[in-house]
Image (cartoon, rainbow, N blue to C red; front, top):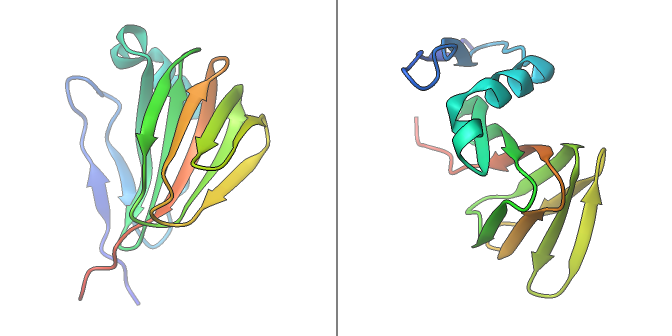
Length: 136
């Protein structure tokens, strides 16, 4: 099956934005993307920055950088998610428990589970989430 290639285009806020986000094969250079989002104005002026590195029907992968004390207030995802911490430390809470996630650790949540995240220190994480499949 041939996959239609999809690209993000560069913008004023993300001049290095030209890249494939969906294709038969997409390579993802995480260290390069970490450097890119740390060098963007959005990182300098906000408590976080993120970039979608892969987006297709049913799956999305997002690299997220959080400054120390940045908080992702309680929310839920419509699909299953996994979160892999690449750098730093975060505090995760759901309705029943709180726990720290350190570098190299992961968590997985089913759809609809309410949760929040606070960066204990500057942190980089890779979020993978399932999305609704669109009819072809």
